[in-house]
Length: 234
View 1 (spheres, rainbow, N blue to C red):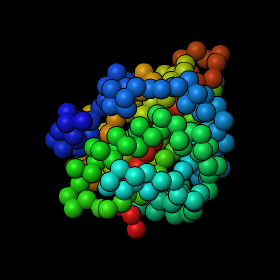
View 2: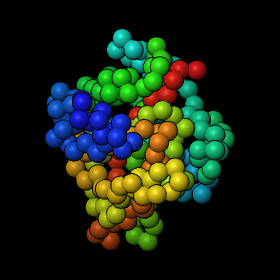
View 3: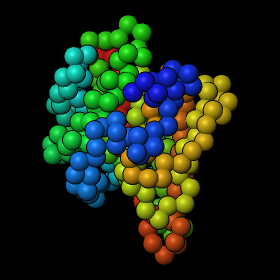
View 4: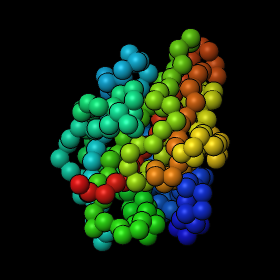
């Protein structure tokens, strides 16, 4: 934990390779079942650009300082237009993450790792965090790119963010770029192996991912990620 925390404290983000993620989560138990759940995501019907390239499911949790994590009743995802000029300003209802995946050891491991890392890094930490979990699949076909971050480089309007790659199939590009608030580039990297992750201080850095396209033009490309955000409870 300490090495990740020190990188976040020093630079505003920390890249964590899959092998380190495995150690962090105490293994990747039943990864196959976890990853296979990305094959059952509904199309995101709230894309203001009219795109049909994104699929997702959503869940919300409460994470207490004592380590207790409880799922909240299903609710909409909301971002103001200050943080998402493309799709913000409306309540977006997505299909819920299945209970089996919400309770899955990988999911629970990511939630607990986030709490363990972010709580000590937070000045005046809250008694409880509002945690949102997103399963995303970005698809690309011949002649049609897929946009992981159609809003461009952005903050999510939370305190902390985790992005973990679940699968990358037939994908060209999909490069993650990190920027300072004044636009200075701070880092560029590509999540390539299942379990590769990045931990972000959402107050200090912006993040974006370049469009994906198929490596093999005859086959669909897809990029599956788990995104988890932490913000102080309202």
